[in-house]
Amino acid sequence: MQYQWYPGHMTKAKRQMMEDLKLIDVVVELVDARIPYSSKNPDIGAMANGKSRVLLLNKADLSDREKTAAWKTYYEMEGYIVVTVDSRGGSGIKEVGTAVAEACREKTERDRRRGIQNRPVRAMVAGIPNVGKSTFINAFAKRAVTKTGNKPGVTKGKQWIRLNKDVELLDTPGILWPKFEDRAVGLRIALIGSINDEILVGTELGFELCNFLTGNYPGALALKYGIEECSDGNEMLLRIARARAWLKKGGELDVEKAAGFLLDDFRNGKIGCFTLEMP
Ligand code: G4P
Image 1 (spheres, helix red, strand yellow):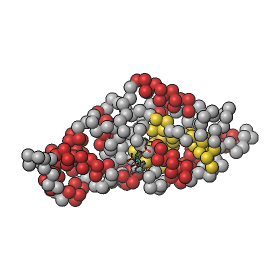
Image 2 (cartoon, rainbow, N blue to C red):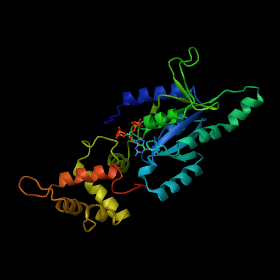
Image 3 (cartoon, rainbow, N blue to C red):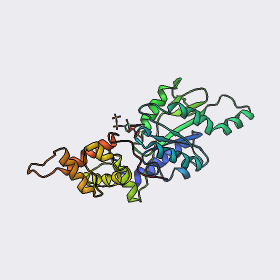
Image 4 (spheres, rainbow, N blue to C red):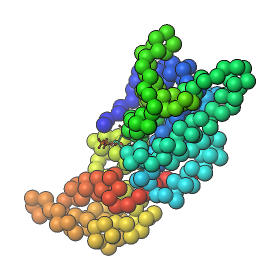
């Protein structure tokens, strides 16, 4: 699950994306609904300039419903057609086909006026690693009428998933890079488990998570671990370890273990549904 972006990787990813963009009408951009800002690629706007854009707030089963609604409004005001999706559970998938057709309505009508008929709209999925691109494509493909094979000469080596007579989706997603500059962004991506924990120490992440949850979702940790809450993340980790009787060999409280379990519980939605940032 480790993604180290080097300049060479980025150039290659960008080149591939620019190639694929030539084939398509609409970009279906995925972000993680728990971090809709931090999981969004900073350069896609410039790269996909002129293309229709649909934004999926994926993993919405793990995010705070009210905050997801606020993000949906926010991105709609930025000009996106936004769909809230749970690619693993399947909810929202159906709406994506409609959203893609909607995003391209103008183009379809222009085609029709020019006498071009039955040319399906072509879409591709893009997003930073781990936002659920493959899971989404699989879920989408299950609904598909047919999977079209290679179309030699036209789109060599590319597979298209045909959802209905109006929409085709490129079966390989565009892999994009995250925002690198901002430490807070890196931290949030690490908290949801999308970059290798070895970069950031588990106890550090656990500490940050405790502080975030006690500050923004008071009572969630108390309920999950049967502890009293306080505003000191380190003390919270100690309390979790004490409540679970996690001790190291010498009898000292095992905060590393507490942090590990806390992060797993959080990432799997076992503490609740949370959003880490607001528009
Ligand atoms: P990517 O192509 O963008 O890199 O992401 P991918 O589809 O591989 O998904 C990354 C992880 O996120 C997978 O979990 C996948 O099951 C999970 N996932 C994708 N969409 C959703 C969603 O809408 N809701 C939830 N809850 N999870 C989602 P994994 O643990 O890496 O694999 P696995 O346990 O599913 O095998």
